[in-house]
Image (cartoon, rainbow, N blue to C red; front, side, top):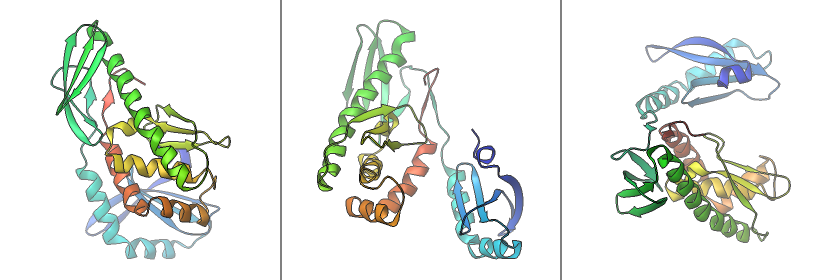
Length: 243
């Protein structure tokens, strides 16, 4: 669902740095004024009945930051659509690999700079590739969850995979963690941030100050990683016909 529709936000415009910037605006029961810039553009969330002059002054104060972030997002590459053909490229643990597709028994072999995929029929290629990628993701992420859990002196959580594109991870009340298999595309340091974030929820199932202290102990550079993760997510490939 579109973020604006999900939050009940309405579109507005504002002149910033000599340009007209469109943004979504929503007010609600919150204590502070907040702004975000991501692939959907600028979003402003304000407390109920906050005077417009205060909102406008806040946006003016953040003007240079807003424009810089909008420009960064505008330069981000759009997702490529993968059809499972030789010559296509996809990111694997942060490095690009080129697909080489062959007919044969189901198999995937990773070599420097390339990924050799064998499938009994062309229409089965993506299924074989996706199955392999999910196995790689689970094999890489499960021990990292155990590592961070050990640092918190809690038991290693059960780890399963989800198909989410934007919700990277979820920690449940039963102590299990679900992580997006698409983390396999990212460099390990960014995937580690997601794992550390969800493991911290094993002790604090919220985003309280104590939670952020726990996360900082596990992953000191979490702020930078969160920002890099948001940017990286925009260009992740889309597998044609896959969910």
